Image 1: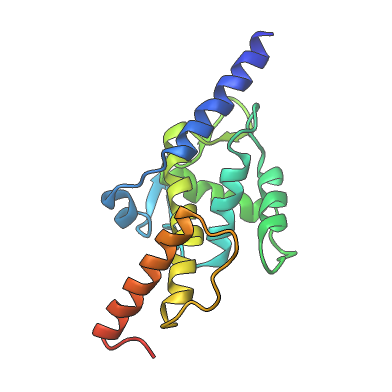
Image 2: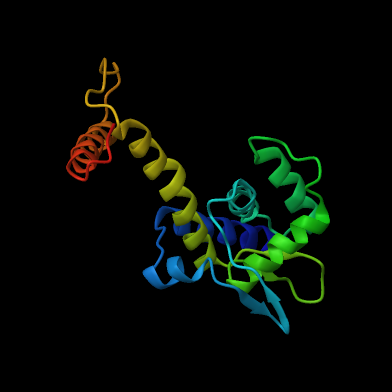
Length: 181
């Protein structure tokens, strides 16, 4: 019963962190720079690489694992989430990506085991990175080059209205900067 309560509390904590995602300017600027895990220097996080985006998505997907997760489980999750499945992405590559995430304090090792876990503040940061790119920037930039939206959907929500306003403003901005085609 106590273990079930701990699992529920961890899940609710992660859910709260996902609801309140946040990333500071300092964190965003430091991600691409190398860091250290113990005495080992590891590379930074390049969010323009599909592999790193898939790794962040996998970390987010495994954040609620009650006992943490292994590099093998992480590799399997990355393979299942990548657009172009990479058969060479194995536990060795996953361990390297996990080390890079550890260098940025986005993943931590579970004491005396080969398991990893995502601390709640890291859930907030990873969630912000994934949501910003996939749910905000991509859709807005994809539609920013179009002056008109087209036919309005039947189920138009307040969020759709916000996206449309952002898209129109982004189109105007890109035109003013002489970037729009």
